Image (cartoon, rainbow, N blue to C red):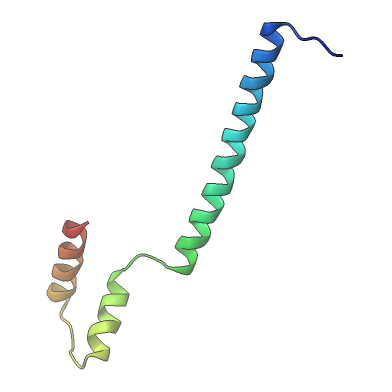
Length: 74
């Protein structure tokens, strides 16, 4: 049977943890980027489109006010 010194076992465990952390970070980053691409955050153009669909012609002041209130609510 293969016998390892305690420090060799610790190196294997630490190496495994580091590789797992890096792989998890990369996968999470890719998933987050894909989610943002599918569901982009609300921007001024979306607010204008929403207000236009509701039958209102939004002024720049109204759009900025809604954006500010949404950012404050976060």
